[in-house]
Amino acid sequence: MAKSEDYISVLCLYSLEDEDLKNLFERHFELLYNRPEHYFDRIRYVAVEQYAASGITSEDVRLYTDVVIILLSASFLTSGYAQAAYRL
Image 1 (cartoon, rainbow, N blue to C red):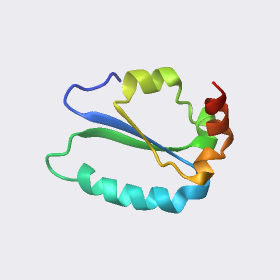
Image 2 (cartoon, rainbow, N blue to C red):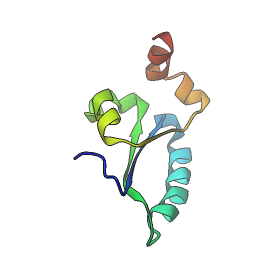
Image 3 (spheres, one colour):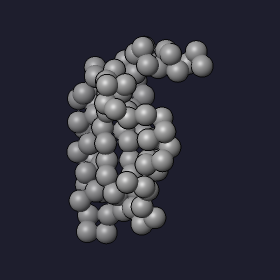
């Protein structure tokens, strides 16, 4: 599915250790998503520790995602994913 011109596709990355933070963010973000005039096509939440296993590739992100939100925390920064990205 290609990006929609009318709606925004969102990917939210977080650390598994920050599940409570992700749940809090999700509750707040869902208020926007559930409004009648919402502009969101879909919102995906993926833990960085499970990113590779999720089947999402960087090409998928580029083609199908308009906005990437990173719930940045100490747990996220010390994850193997963030450490590998930092070395690039």
